Image 1 (cartoon, rainbow, N blue to C red):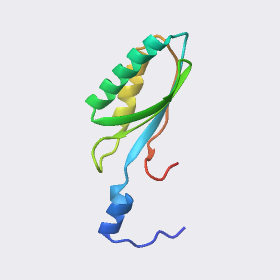
Image 2: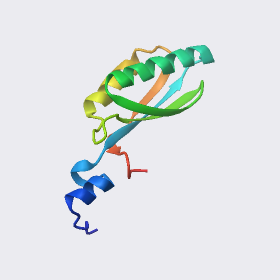
Image 3: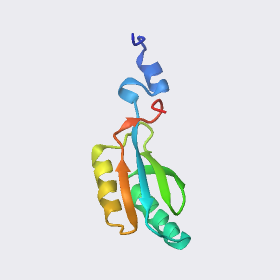
Image 4: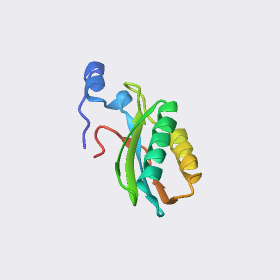
Length: 111
């Protein structure tokens, strides 16, 4: 596939080339937890992610959770260090059965 030639302004506007923003998906399943534990966990997770200057969107319930994490900076990206840090933090939670942290993907065009 031939990549069209674009000037810097257009690459920036389209978030391509050097302006590509990367993020990653995280999936997890839980052992038997109730909604109070889930609410506390989600608050802690948001605090952890925001402390790393990231944003998170998630959906799920008391059995499983899917999340997408990216940078809160306009042209910033999540990094492999962010993936590793989140994975390590999630492993400290005893009620999480399975954790799957995917590779970095283009946050604008991967889905």
